[in-house]
Image (cartoon, rainbow, N blue to C red):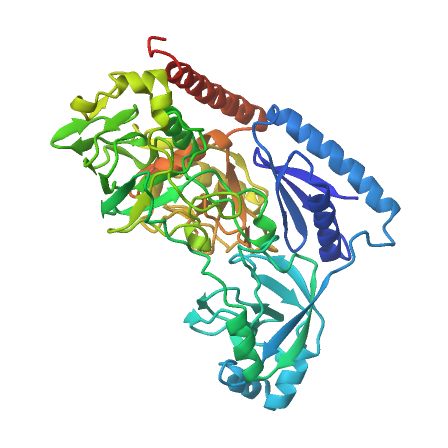
Length: 580
């Protein structure tokens, strides 16, 4: 039977570590759930001996969603016991072409020498095996294949390459893999494939799912070059459209790190595409509500400092999150409210007073291509627009859309721009105390620590490292353990997972986290406190406060009700004369 446990307040882990065929069971259940698509499942991510399901939020009370998920999984488990002898979803076999010519197999000679084999024998041992995609991770479409001949057992390179060409076929330990795109990497390159592992223009975008199998067909260098040229598609990254008669925004200065963000891309983690999206979703929703947009509309995420933007069209904007003012024509403009700017206005942001990220919503939205269901950037996965740079032009979809609102139209005074409301909304969170408390539930591996080490973990005041980014919040503190904790079989991780690497400096996953990880997870941040992770800046301090699931539900419900009440009030006001 399956062993299901709750991880944090938003995920269920199904443990197969006691099974004699753990991977097969993981693959079978993941394919069954991906086919059924239960309403409570946002992400279904296979690990080496576990399956983690991230639960949907907002469809029901959190406790009801969890109860429904556990009940459905129990039924599925009983059904699987009845039909254990036969596979419902037999493995799909993909035939992949690989060229072993030294011009593209950059480590072939070194591999053969290290394994004390001839070149011919090395190629034969690699190509004649049937491989199984155990899990996916690292980057979109990157599958870790088992089945490598033990005679080809090699460690990773002592020093990773700065550039591994797209399509490189590599080996390390007892695994082989194919790099879906050009990237740094530390595996031994034994060949190269012209086949696409991940392509945003395909449906589905990924070629391999966990449990699929791979056979290799050797091809010549000439065949590789022809197929590689034929299979070359448009780059995954797409730049904003520069030609739009509706108006545009020109980037005069980019700010520290500015990107295009919207809602997370859910449902792609089993292809190693993490959800991404705005780090502070609550601020995204409030900013969009203030300009009359649907709350998930794509906006500009500003990190640490804001950009300088030139508006070539009168535009209604709002920014929420970090506390910062803007300057237009020498006039100071406060945030957290709707603001009309005149055509030709240059908006510059003053330094952030508190907080680390702000979301700038544009009335009517930005004109951007939709990729995998969203228009925002996933920087670490190279999906969507690149980070915003000086000289770029962002096209507007419909800058006149806010004029459909009675209130925003009355606010627009063409001869007296810029103009804004006197009232404002409060940001979801701003760090105002010396130490920010972050509420979390104990992680599944907290028991790896001794009782004294657990007490020290909870009492430690952590400092946010300047190595933090959209992938994760890195922390520094006095916390140490006597013995290094064991690594765990790779399993799915989510926004808010706290991992402890051998450095003893925790990493808390943020929006662009990798989909799987093998470090012990000591804590899981509750949903309502994820905004705090987005807003604490390098050098600031946090402390983790343990709560139980009932306390987490109460805190989450309170935050959700306040957020929804604020949005409802804004939308009511925007749709009326503004006197509400």
